[in-house]
Length: 480
Length: 100
Image (cartoon, rainbow over all chains, first blue to last red; front, top):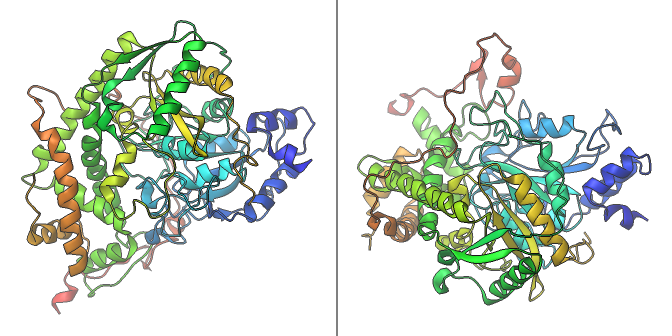
């Protein structure tokens, strides 16, 4: 009985609660017990019981439990962004998207581990230990939203919030065999998200299926007076229903799938199989060109660290978090605090960003990267004149072993090869599980024009039905 | 190929970033940053003449809110996580303290 309840998608659970067929308190307690026995290190904080306010069955989300990536501020609840510099920090306010989900009836089950300040592709940069992949505990769950992805895949929570700056929702979704949506930049408020790279960061859902993705997203969107870069979503977010892809034009970018792009054979095979299924549903699949896409990674690793170096200046031992006295003067307190509080990858990116913005290098690096970003956005605009969606593998490989890439920053960055172009262009992209390669999940990515989420979710839903991926927690070996 | 970053450059950047690096960290950082910059270097060969830079991808112009008074965080809440709250403010060491 409890397994049947835990196997319900969030949308199905919410519907059953609203219909009076399921007790939200019982569902919440089942998940809480399961999450409490978490042996994947997916959670950074777990609630110790049902909320005092109880559950409101009449709300759209009807009390269904929610996992939230650690970097979303939650009032009075630890929010550490995977960093020692924020160890034990309890913010005075709650992020807008979390508030919106509370208002829609979601109940916070726990906060999930992540790479420090969302910088990483394996969750090994978390100051509180790596998260394990429920499909194979010797492997990484991806990152940076690795705790959210692992928890959802293992059935420790029905769904979870993540954030995506260069692939941090899509790549862990791919590694864990679940669905991850990076929305159009600006569609969800960034207020209360601890910033990494402000022109790229977006909140999004990590879910078991495409319908849950649409449901969670529909309660996250909207303009927010506290985020001046947020925009009103131009139409209501619909639940996906499409079963075919008649006439849908899918573009396969040659540049991202070339022989030297580092994509594994197993991932290529899975990608080809998914394209065949898409053709079977009526889609027209053709090659397309994104000439500047191979340079996206380089532009990204200038723009994102540059913005991070400015954003992370706020961690200085003055207003919150760690303070280390240093030699007793102000500047030495800053430098000593930051040296003790930040991990190696965060230091590396602060250094890279500071260098790229420093006098004499600013135009050569940062200025050049911003011009490449323009070219990348133009490439997509041209492609979308001929294609409805661009499709690629989400990541070049499947989940790799813990430690396999942690000593080579550049090898780690190459994980983002297929996801950063969309981030730089600000357009929405979704990763859905396309099958297994040697027992590990492989993700398929679809990207569309800005604010095309309804069409994107529809196409992903049609493909999901055709693929029929079995990602149930039991299948994933996710018994905690 | 980018020349290997000098230790002095790494020290200078660390100072700008307010990061105290050990000698060993400085050595590792010089190697790693040089390797990353070497990879990034390829974009400097692209023809980008006349291309406008994009710092923000979605068109947002003058997002202004109504100019109405509203409450800020209560002082005690804003100070609740401060390492050294002093007299209702954030206490810091004196900027000149180390000279003494």
